[in-house]
Length: 389
Image: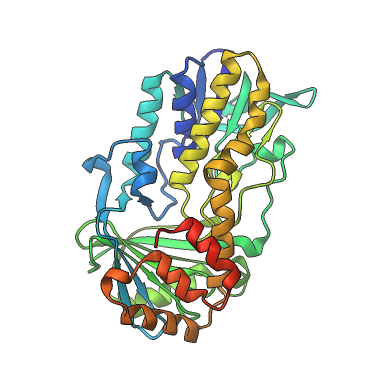
């Protein structure tokens, strides 16, 4: 441990370790501080990722891939089901404990130092600028300085708050989620299933994602407003009893997912936020692995450029670069979410019925939204911008 680094990354999830990797390989000295004992554990994620988002950063490896996804399945409140065949592998189910560990190894090989079981409990601020962090390690209070701090400390991020950034999310926009990994579950190993309906997951969805033969991640997310009235766990238990009564629970996890657009401010003097800390989450699906890695790569590159050129103003480019790469798309997805999650059960039933009537080759994700939002013409152009139909 040195007394000062060019860059400190708080959090060793995918967004944090990608940021560390991109900064370290450009020659910056980088320290990653992780509060948990192990990188990649505990897992708080449905573990699905799109192929393009993954392969932009790492070559797929069977040791951390549980399933290759070629289909989406949608189940209506009345039980009718439609399958959208993507035609090729368009996604993967990860084993996050191994995947996150692998990303950390790559960051380390690039030159980053990683320290686990390190609890960051404050920032060093000088003249309104972040110049380092305070942390507890093995019972001792310590400090380490840096020219730039990257906050990758998740949805509950305190780093941004300490830096004066507005990180609060309205409780109605914070999805209440509960998930189990279950054995003795029969499901298609190439398909992600999504269930809709007010009895299943109001203002959200219930998911069944394959994790290997006989095993699946089964969970749901409901809006904060719904979760305030009835817990996500209660809905999940009802769904398990109805759809998978013989499932055996292996692990369980609960948490919040910020289903909103990116924070208005994701950078300030001496600091950038990435991943869930910056709300770089797909507001429609709640997925955040690939978008977090995109945010991390941008922040890492800009941080390295700042160090190389001895000019911290490169940080100011970060919001614009993020908006160009993914933020603009997230704003569109947020509009689509608002349109879909207000559906009644009858509307969901009609939507699935309409898709069932289409020839299989014409069933696409884009078509799903066009049919769903046909009575909202203002959103049709937005759909075209996001989906290839």
